[in-house]
Image (tube, rainbow, N blue to C red; front, side, top):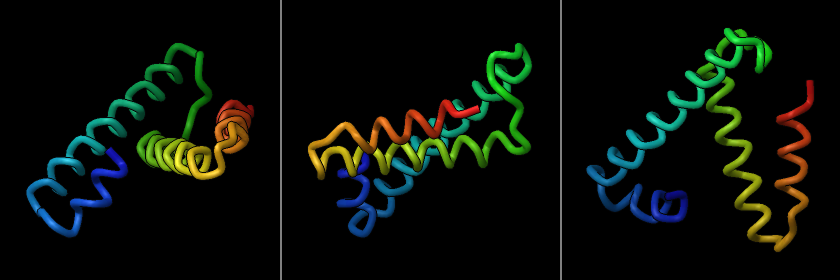
Length: 86
């Protein structure tokens, strides 16, 4: 989705809007899971779950991209360590 999104974002408004809607749905789902986890005590409470979900998505997206570029697991391992830090 990332590669496709970056390639078509400037070429097709309708495709960009479709990809953005998919991104929004994914981030909303992550926010919902954070809220549910906070309610049942499996995830710490965040002041704004939507902002946290956006940050987590961006962090993992960037880590996946950097991991691909460097052909190294290090960016993914760093993202995991930072994500799971209490």
